[in-house]
Amino acid sequence: MAEAARRLTTLAEQVLGAPLPVRVRAWDRSESGPPGTPVLIVRRRRALRRLLWKPGELGLARAWVAGDLDVEGDLYEAMDLLTGHLWERGEDSVRRSRPAALLSALRDPALRAACRELLLLAGPLPPPAPPREEARTGGGPLHTVRRDKQAISHHYDVGNTFYERVLGPSMVYSCAYWGTDEDRAATLEDAQRAKLDLVCRKLALKPGQRLLDVGCGWGSMALHAAREYEVRVVGITLSEEQAAYARKRVAEAGLTDRVEIRVQDYREVHDGPFDAISSIGMAEHVGSARYAEYARDLYALLEPGGRLLNHQIARRPLRDEADYRVDEFIDRYVFPDGELAPIGRTVAQLEQAGFEVRDVEALREHYALTLRAWVANLEAHWDEAVRLTSPGRARVWRLYMAASALSFERNRIGVNQVLAIRTPPGGESGLALRTRDWR
Image (cartoon, rainbow, N blue to C red):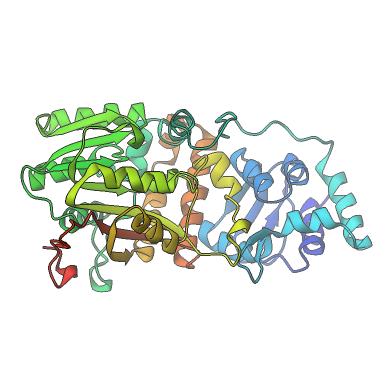
């Protein structure tokens, strides 16, 4: 086992077919690889067992969450350097795990020999059980009300204090709206307040109107709309913890006469019509099989002339959409059953439900800035975050948010605000001729 790092580096380069761009430190404290780069720490041999048992993203994720793998140095730089070695994209833009593809093929004798040595390094198989932070939503069809509630609970019911440390006082869990390049000094709180106000202005909220906030989270949008625009708000969430927190905030703000928070699925809302609907960072949970139903339900809940603001993460389209696969790390540890769709499909399905789509604003770079701010918050409160949840949960969040920031920065995913209207039969949209004035 002497100099395990050198052996690991040599084997990794044989398997991946290219030099590793980061330094490796192994469980025996040996190091190998280019100096001056981030260090990939293999703390325990069982990290290799996890990867051999589940080649690709899931094995890597389990090793990271369990603390078997770590990074010393700039996490963003490490992930950026490793991305092309761990994943590749074909002409159809489908992301494939290089280790999974190479370890499953094993046609080359040298590669087979490398894998045999990797098995010796790894120790006895099989690996330990998956970390307890892995989601278990049970069987059955996707996106039933019951299963969606389980998935939402896995992600959101991990303690409101934990989210306070990550999100900051705004408690807004979606892309903020930052200023211009000359105005980047704005705080996260300023940027989140600007986003909430942008949504309200796009919806043209007026005193006395009814707003439905789908996926209301901890109540920030509902509070802003009620306080600043004097509307009556119904906020719905599937998270019991979010609802309790939001109700407390509403009571402390003295807005119980204007804001009602419910634990309710969007499919169970039957007390429309509403003048406006906001859906901010919720539609990613709906699923492709249910999206047409989601669009129809929201359309039916609006008054003629009412507006929908749908704020949603989008992925890049594939040549063959049948090749789309949900990211294993995200599915098992972050958003169980979550799905992303290209913006074109989202717009088409909203229009097929009867909406007139009037504006699409891309906020990709804004989300990258937001995620970097959240990562900084998490790292600043790391010890407390670990105490509030678990070491594995804190590692999940750090990896997920940092990787997502890079994905937005590198244009692998985007986020868009879509303004859609239930246009009355006469065709009067109610929009100004110069729409982007948002007055």
